[in-house]
Length: 128
Image (cartoon, rainbow, N blue to C red):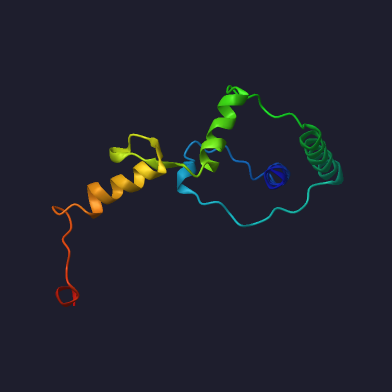
């Protein structure tokens, strides 16, 4: 924002502000040129504004209120830290699923890895 203020001041000072109706912003690329510092009154105003904003942010310790109750807020953390449960994504991107870990591992084995229609056992000779 400081650069924009200085640039605006420089353009106003040097009369480079031409109101051309043919100006198409998407045709121009941003410049890496840094405008020189503005007069001391403008620079002081920039510094005071920056300090005021920084102070206001530092003093504002309030957090936005959540629409969740304390219980609702704690539930996902409790589930995440519970080793008996597992959170995974459902098929076809229908959202997250919470399952017992034993059920999840059993289904992985019986419905996928041990299913003879999907995988078949190979001897070491066949694999090589």
